[in-house]
Length: 159
Image 1: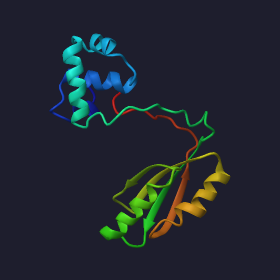
Image 2: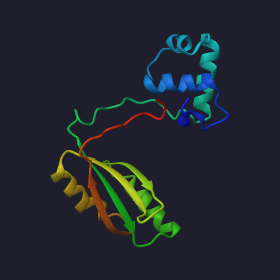
Image 3: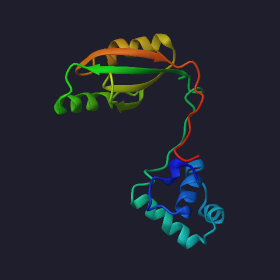
Image 4: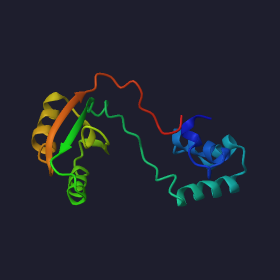
């Protein structure tokens, strides 16, 4: 078991097996899932429902291949705000969540305030998103961009 799977003392080994199996294939049948984790269908279904109810499983969705969709340009953007009082952070947070090109946004402790993962078609598209959208977000004072040359690892939480 790796450190990622040891974070919650409320999850036992069977819960972790369920999470790994569902994380790898959200469309797995309850029959296959129960066989994989070593439970009969009724207790396996009950555990799955509990993991959903407790919010450990947030939902199910299709994983789309952004490269096949023509979105293979990834940039990471450091964002420094001019004002970091609670209301100003909330305004930035609300606005950044509306940008479809921003795949992830993390508040960071350090020399800048946020780190964005931005996915676009190409550099030209990225420059437009940066110039027209990201730079116009509330309270943005400064940005720095790092372009990803290759994704070495992009995985689910449990591996």
